[in-house]
Length: 123
Figure 1 (cartoon, one colour):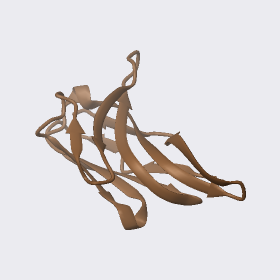
Figure 2 (tube, helix red, strand yellow; figure 1 turned 120 degrees about the vertical axis):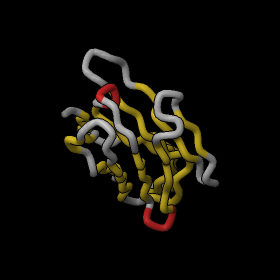
Figure 3 (cartoon, helix red, strand yellow; figure 1 turned 90 degrees about the vertical axis):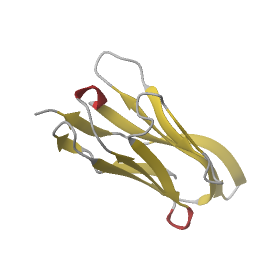
């Protein structure tokens, strides 16, 4: 069974920084794209940033220049460094991964979500 676990959220003042981590665990053969999404109260979940297996990145315009996504392929982890945080960055942040897992039946492709970590930007 595969799980994604986020950590690193919390309360931060405007202008501050946070580093979110996502750890994938289980019978994982390989991870393709990983991404961070967020959902604010009353709003739809939106893309924040993605990173391919080869390290190519993409960012939402709202966080471009303030955030950096990275990954550690050896540890099946992804990270999101967020700087110059604004109150409008307040949301639950979710990790997402496209990966190949294995079981006794063989190898399978699937997409997974973590449970989310709360980020609150407020003075």
